[in-house]
Image 1 (cartoon, rainbow, N blue to C red):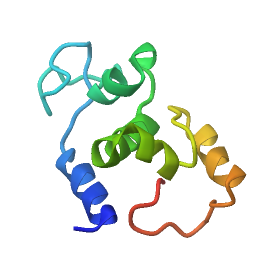
Image 2: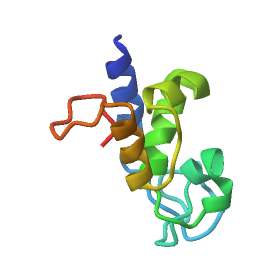
Image 3: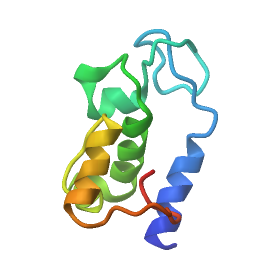
Length: 107
């Protein structure tokens, strides 16, 4: 399995995960469903940001699950961020920003 395949496999395993209304049942895909932005992704990587929008947290979480913290940080151009414009800037700073994503890219 290639690294890209591994990353995509982990991401696909999360299909059906619903954000939660509170910190309860964060590991369940469907229990405690709500719209308060509580997720296992924030719990695991950004505990102080629990309850905030989590799209970028999810992507970082998938990379960490696939490759570990050190390699994930390198692949994500040097940092983790829960804020997508900041993550985009990491790529721009490293000269790796593209407008046509490929499988395995952070989008």
